[in-house]
Image (cartoon, rainbow, N blue to C red):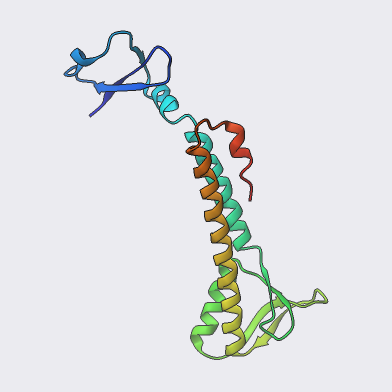
Length: 165
């Protein structure tokens, strides 16, 4: 059912009535007609800002997940890619149940496909899982910060700018 919207003279409260006129007798005197968009802006003043901030934080999380990590799965620190294709290839190697070559960069900044045992691949998978879990934990912390702002007595648009990855 569609509605018609009204706001109080102060512009702080919204009233919605059935658009078919069946509730017209209940419309309080002094209410001012307004559009659904205006009603939504009054009811949810930060909705667009919240959606944009959550998208920004989600994009930062996804970038962090795929940013790579340093693992000592080979015995010495090497840098590994953590993008989806890297993780899928690692899962395929582990599923095969034997070792295999996997790309990493050593301390001399030489990127190469290096032989890993099955145990080393499993160790790398654990490191990647810990890396991804840490990014999601951080993401959830940021969402909680947004929630605190939304539920504060008098939030301001600038409060959301304080939530950064």
